[in-house]
View 1 (cartoon, rainbow, N blue to C red):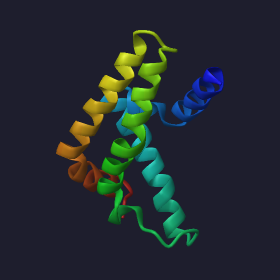
View 2 (view 1 turned 135 degrees about the vertical axis):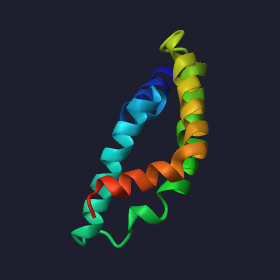
View 3 (view 1 turned 60 degrees about the horizontal axis):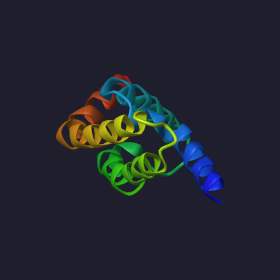
Length: 114
């Protein structure tokens, strides 16, 4: 049973690993996902404009998914000392997003070119 839980955590982490790495890595992949969501909105594939909730959505994502997942990875010990790093980066990125996220969203919108 423990092995199954660890594998589930690994699969979850593989999808969001950028949130538990250096700020510039997080920013790069966050902007790519933002652009993907924005393009879906512009093409009519979704009614939700990501600009409207991206800042707050990321805070919730960190608080309710990323940080709890990083804690689970640390607790299960599958990555050894690196597990501490993942949690540290997740917490640091959350803090930096809270501080600069609204500015970052504005930059991402500018980078869309219109």
